[in-house]
Length: 424
Ligand code: FE2
Image (tube, rainbow, N blue to C red; front, top):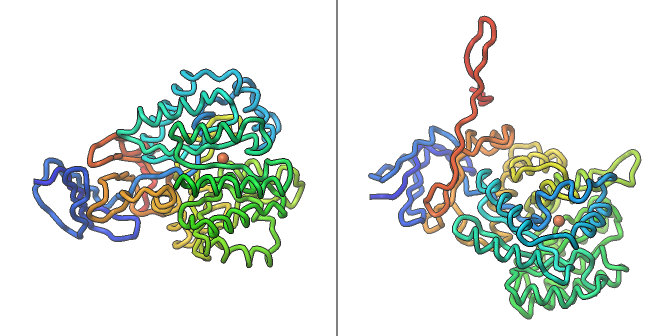
């Protein structure tokens, strides 16, 4: 007797009429038309069953703090960093925990079951680190939380940041972060990349740096990050987050850079909602779009994931943990409107970020953990178009969240009925 059986599923790769069988928290069969006795059988009726959403880039220590102590008037990255600097000394651990747990509830409801969050280590009290380590423990039965030691004010530039970052790793933070474009000089930025990659290699950790989140085409720290990854044998364990300066780089230079990134096994994490908002602020017109070169990176064989980055914090007033909203913005900004392009954008919030985070249990094949989101959509493109309702969310075969199907009753004269926005 199976624990759980889904029938009539469409899968993200386009296969229809598929059954997915679950036993002891793991997938035991994926086959068309398969049936067997089960404690619970769910007829997906042609809707999309996917691995859950994974957010590869988030800031959980600042989430849901919008308006504290004031709002970002200019809307720029730099005013956001200054505002976060004003807020930091007033932070209280319980409030960080409460906001983070509230966000985790939102995330699970939206079908996110893994988040990589950066945590600022420049406050010598390491309050946010302690708070998020506590949260990681509190949510571990339903959400995989990966913490990145993030020196927001500069690894070399901020007093004490080097010691604080090492202390954070000693306390159990998972990943080495950085922000080379925020160091005092280009040379300092490159030195920070080298030091941080060496630290990660010594400790056997992954690396995820805020890298070149700038409109300056000469911000080229991603090149150093890639060459250090290659030199230290960190292939497949290093990610460059944001990487926005690449949108403004010289095309000839990028033609050399892309193969280097592929050779180094680097991943790139773009944050379309935030960077379409923050970048290009010094431009009049034409105004740059502010996102890295997503389709070109993908074509070069570089794994690209989309992250949410911010929800209601000093940098961004909006957001709700909706990775379909993130992918929807990403495909617009990158003009990835072909069927294959849209499918790749869906992958960029599901399959690819799971790979970037090293979550080997994620997949839709026997042996993988039974983690799913069932969407009110008949394929990945429809899911993006509708930012589809998450009908159900499961982890290890256990249901974590349910949302009723969306349907609006119409009271039109001579044309009563209902509408769900699914066509045909
Ligand atoms: Fe970020």
